[in-house]
Length: 309
Image 1 (tube, one colour):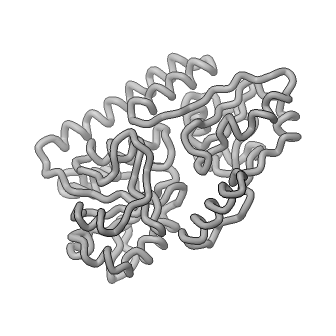
Image 2 (image 1 turned 90 degrees about the horizontal axis):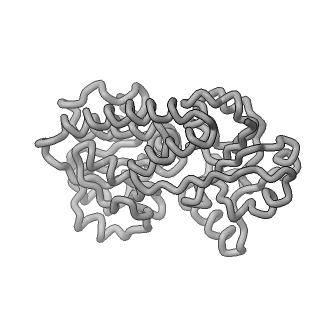
């Protein structure tokens, strides 16, 4: 089977199931596992946003959509040459990945026509279900079942240990400027880890006003802009520290503001999502979950600068 993955989450799932050798095309954002970066890139960003501020990125994306354009360019010639049997796409968010609608014409022109598998998760359970769907589609149903069982056990251990702990009010930021709360599976991740997130489970992230956040009185603020690695998240977290509204929060007063590697552990709906729960658990309840998070996945932001766990 020849597979083109148009969403980083699917790429990770395919490699985790042992189908990495069948992946013949990916997007520019498919950087995990590292082997994925050796595959031909069929999707590239229309505008290079590296080094730009959150406000600038938001403006660029908003202007593209206002003109009826998507943020990505599909290499239709390369896609045709790769002759995929299966194309895995995402129906969740066009900013996160190429959706079926944005490449419908290109795929329709391919001969022979490939099968399209669309992932559209909103919850942790949906993430598990999509792993099983991917496994079924690529002849790796048994491997997918075993992986989901392992992930369920891992998340179950965290949930059991978090029972009875104080539920800390958490504001997970999926964007900093303008501020967005978390959405889809992230509030559920926070809940499993022993917190109460400002966002709503299984609902999209949304732009929020400072007064809403202040009414929530977050005890912990986690900076995890969608698609940002740890260094990029930390950069935005430092800017966040200068906002007047942030300085009024219990989180700022107690030094409980963090940056995380959102690109791998929170933005994607993949096996790494479960590792994201362990990161949240250690942030929210460090005494009970110390050492649970993978090394180098989060930092605490404070007046003394970059403090890495």
